[in-house]
Length: 83
Image 1 (cartoon, helix red, strand yellow):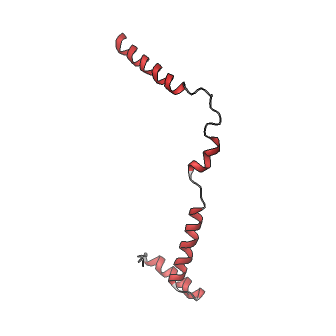
Image 2 (cartoon, helix red, strand yellow):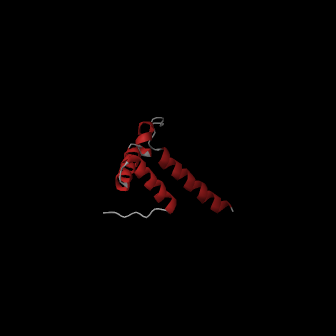
Image 3 (tube, helix red, strand yellow):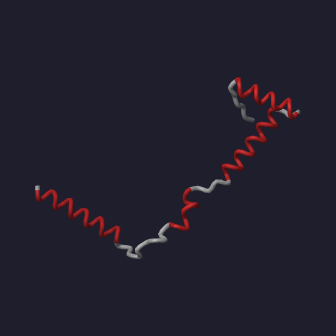
């Protein structure tokens, strides 16, 4: 069982809706929560959204990251020795 504390204005709105629909507040809260969770679960994560694009426009040269790091290290070393 879960207990939820609602601000007074939200509690009053819920009570009014429950009376108008002839439903319990618990039933309305469950209905709203189910709708919220269903909507939230249907939103794909960022990986799923971009999966088809990852690596799509790659150079095909798998050494670029490694050579970039080596070039950067060389520049840093060179800057230290020229100062």
